[in-house]
Length: 83
Image (tube, rainbow, N blue to C red; front, side, top):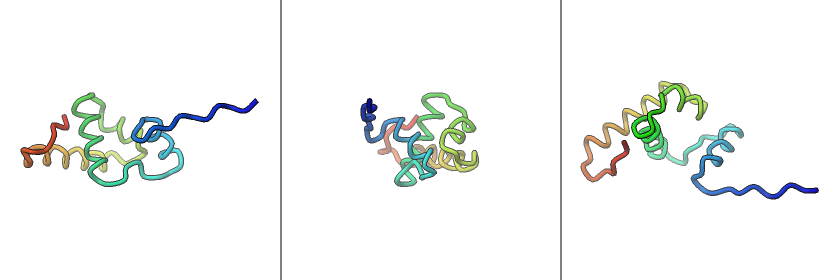
């Protein structure tokens, strides 16, 4: 008996896992990585090393994205609140 097709939603967490599993970069552009990192660390309290493990990236890359997000938030008053 065939299995039911999986439900794939753009932007869903399962989509991130699928891309990581195939060895692809999770985000389409740099701002998406910055936004995700700022939300994960700032709002949800995840540690940088946990986000790096989830994305299979070096923690220094995640720190760079986090710093960019915080700087963007500080310098651009029109920027949405990432944290």
